[in-house]
Length: 341
Ligand code: P6P
Image (cartoon, rainbow, N blue to C red; front, side, top):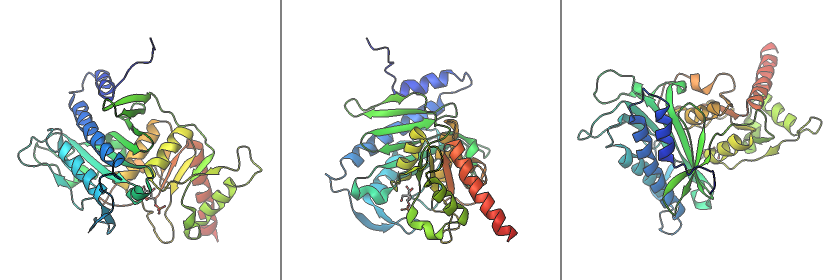
């Protein structure tokens, strides 16, 4: 008999809860409700090409981006799965301009859920991996009433849990409650997430860099110098390989497992980069740091950024600690030269 423990996500959550005597079980039940939504979204994503769910619905989201049916479906599925459990006081979605209140006929809880229901949706029609990202905080506002915008605008280090799902060749859920990072692969035959990556640790240095090189001409001089440095041969482990899916969850997941660095920098066209702080950067930064990696905006930890707006963007450099520190050094030295000139 194999010694490998048949560990489902639910069993892993409950065993994690037992490690914290003060736990009430509410977070566990929240994560279990979330898992149901993620399984249903996975089902639809995997058969999207068959049920004509692809294509545009002719509307735009809060960012003026064309919204595809699958985006809306994933958004609605997350809301319907999470609105009635009594665990949340408020929600926020990348697909909604404002915070999302819990319907008045449901109990209000003490957690806050932020989510990007379907990240990388521009890749849907090409069958490239896409994903769902979630981030959980404790409410900060007093009283038992509806949560507030301030509850949603907390610094990333205050997350109590965060995770992402990659809907790819298989559906992988990676999450952390702050103590290590675990990965689960969905077994569609039994509809269970099974522990497949018990303790993900990112290598201290990798040999892959991930960035959209089409934006080269808009980059900071220090970044241009860094990328050229990675492409030279005269250093052990160089040149690095370049990998870029264009779907952040896929690029971050590969970086987490193989090491290296994923970058979506600010540039002369986008002074804050493209990725959203609350829905994309904070959750993956929480996970990456829990796996022994580093995530910054080029200077400060992503998790320490004080949010000002629900949909604000942030530059992000995330991955192996030595790689992220190296690109920060190139940026800093080039900036010092510019300031000194
Ligand atoms: P670009 C997908 O649309 C997304 O939001 C992220 O998942 C991804 O990393 C990024 O945009 C890709 O952006 O500008 O390289 O196409």
